[in-house]
Amino acid sequence: MGYEEVCGVTAVDRRKVGRVRRKMMAEEQISRMAYFFQAFSDLTRLKIILALEVEKELCVCDLTMVVGVSMSAVSHQLRYLRNLGVVKNRKQGKMVYYSLKDEHIKELIHTVTEHIHEE
Image 1 (spheres, rainbow, N blue to C red):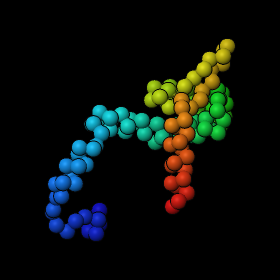
Image 2 (spheres, rainbow, N blue to C red):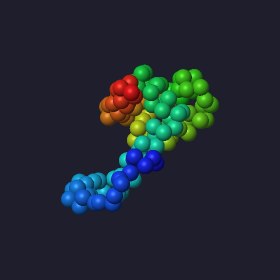
Image 3 (cartoon, rainbow, N blue to C red):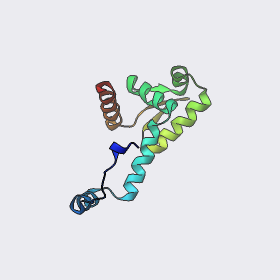
Image 4 (cartoon, rainbow, N blue to C red):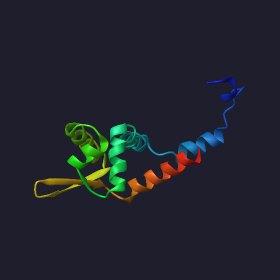
C-alpha cells in the first residue's frame, strides 16, 4: 500500500464503526457469500456459467465443446456449481441437461458485465 492510501493519523469514528457493525451481515452469512463467489473465480466454471447464460440448457457434451476442457473436468465443475446452488440439472432419458438455477445468477452476470464495461 502506498503512503497516500492510509490515514496519516490514527483516528476511529466510533459512530460509523458502530453503525457498520450493526448493519453488517452475520459472520456465517459472509462466509456463505464468499463460498458462493468462488463459483465465479475459476475460469472453467465461469465459462460454464456464461455458456448457460447464452443457451438456457446444455448437456455435458455440449459444455465440453464450448469450454474446451475434458468431459471429466466439466462434470466435476458442474457438480461443484450444483452444490453451490448456481446450476440445476434435468434428466431426459440418458441425457442430463444443465441450466442456471435462477434469474439471480443472470442478474449477477449482467451487473458484473456492466461494471467491467464502465472501466
